[in-house]
Length: 386
Ligand code: PMP
Image (cartoon, rainbow, N blue to C red; front, side):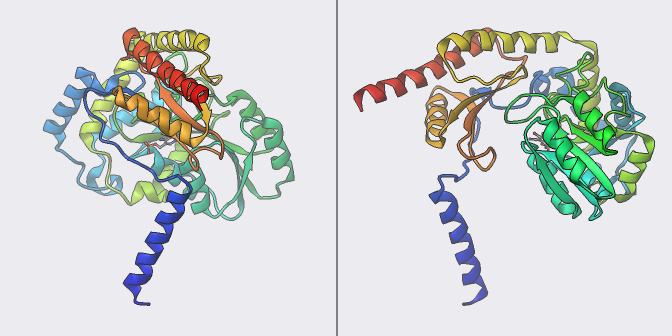
C-alpha cells in the first residue's frame, strides 16, 4: 500500500473508532450574544476595560510579540516585574512564567523527574500532568480521587529514590478542592515533594485570591503552578517556589527554554489583572454570591448537582446522549455550557460543566436555571409518552 493510502486508512480508522464510541469532539463558534456558562473567566477580568487597556498600552510599548525565547532576548522588564509580583502574591521566593499551563506542567515534570522517580497523581488530575509524567519517563502511579490513605499506601510501597506527589488544587471537571494540608503531611512523612496545579484556584480561593495553596508555606507545597488564562483573564502560567527550583526549571524545562516568551502585552495585562485581584476583593465576593445563588435555586429543582463550592458546578447526567441533548437544547436558547464526555471524564460520568463568573447577573443565572428546568421537563415528557 502506498504511504499516503496507509495514512488515509489510519485517519479513517481513528475517525470511525471515535464516531462509533459517540465521542466525536465538536467545536462551536461562540457568538457574542451567547450567555457563557462554560468558560473560566471567573472574575470577568478578560473583559475588564482596565485589563484590555493595559494590554493595548503594553503592545504599543513593547510590540505585539516577544520576538524570542526567554533565554535569548524575549525576557523583557514587564515579564520580570510580573514574575516578582506573582512570587510576592503566592508567598514564594520566585516565580517563572510559562506560555501556557499545559507547557508549565510538562516542563516541571519533564525537568524534575526521570526513570529513578516515582510520580503519584490523583486519578482526576488534568491531562497535562499525566502527559508530563509520561514524558519524564518516571513511574506513574495514580491514587483514588482525594484519598490520602490510598496515596500513603502507594508511597509506602515505592522504592524509587525520588518521589513526587502531584494534585490539581481545584479539580477542573468536578470543582472539588484537594486537601492540601493532608497531602503535605503525607508527602513529608514519605520524603516526597508535593506539586499543586492550582489552575482553577488562583484568583478565586484564599484570602488574597492566591489560591488554595497560596497561604501554605513553600515547605508544605514546594511546587505551585497557577494559570493566567482563567481567573486572571489573560493567558500563560507560572510556577512559584524556591530560587533553587526556579533556577533548575530555567536550565532544564524544555517547554520553557525552547519556545517564544509570552507576548509582553499579555504580561502587562496580567500585571493589571493581578493588581485588581489583590486590590478589589469585591469581585471574589460577587462570584461567591453567584455560586450561592445558583445552588440555592438549583437544589429545589432537583437538578443533579455535585458537592462543589467553587465556580465549577457540574451537573452529573451520566449518559453521553443526555449530556449532548441538554447542551444542544440550551444552545438553542443561546446558553453555552460545557458538554463533557469520556475520555475527558471516566466512563459513565458524562456531565454538563457549568461555570459561574462574577460577571453573571442574577437574571443571567435565572435564564440558565429556566433552560435547565426545560431540559428536565422535556425529558420527563418523553418518558411519559414513551
Ligand atoms: N491545569 C489544569 C487543572 C487545567 O484545567 C488546565 C486548563 N484546562 C491547564 C492546567 C492548562 O492550562 P492552559 O489552558 O493555560 O494551558
